[in-house]
Amino acid sequence: MSTTRIFDEHYYELINRARSEVVTHLLAELQLKLGLRTVLDVGCGLGHFSGLLKSSGLDVTAIDGRQQNLDEAQRRNPNIRFLRFDAQDSAMRSLGKFDLVFCFGLLYHLENPMLTIRHLEEMTGKLLLVEAVIQPGDEPTMALIEEAPQEDQGLNHIAFYPTEACLLKMFYRAGFSHAYTFSTQPRHPEYGAQPRKPRIRTMLAATHTAVQSKLLVRTPEPKSLVHPCALPEAPPTNGAVDKIKRFAKKPLPDKVKVIKRIVAGK
Image (cartoon, rainbow, N blue to C red; front, side, top):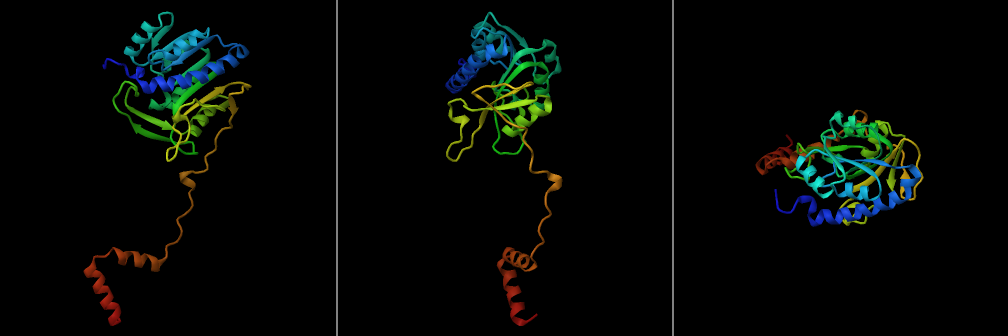
């Protein structure tokens, strides 16, 4: 392991600062309103957000799939309970329900994100908060990605990266009645589209009952406009155009022979 832990690098410092600002504002608005007292930090890494949530007065339980992360997170946050669980394993449900379930930077690293969201839904008492890398596009789809074998990637280094629409649809299909985008995303380049580069990160929320917040925008379940089994038939081919295309692909000697036959009227 490197001397500087990967989650302590400058990139994560900047992105965590931007994410923390939004989380702090949301908690200031909703913590008392919703009666948030307990929280489960899923995929806690080195415990950055576990500490933030604890400082907000919440009773924090944090889990991660890597023991080395948990050991360091415990060293940094001795008053928080850290446990080892794979978020894809239903054993996680044995921890029970929490007012707030917090899952940042994890879902897109998993082989089974839909199954994990089902676990999160079962454990969410009042509010689920999710942050994730997303694929570009408006359709609710996922791409299978082979990840690098690094400490900030998934346990098995093979994962499904969803579009934002896909995450929202999975929330609804897992059993949440309301899903939300954020009116204000973190102030970091990855949360907004850039010239020649799409937005690659998002923050979302889901609940079982309606929530009023200045930061949350109720978003209906996305509908897929494309279905592979309902694609339109290919248009009929133009015979003359096809012949020209085939002629263009022929080597020069063959083209000369064809031209000679045409000139000779054969």
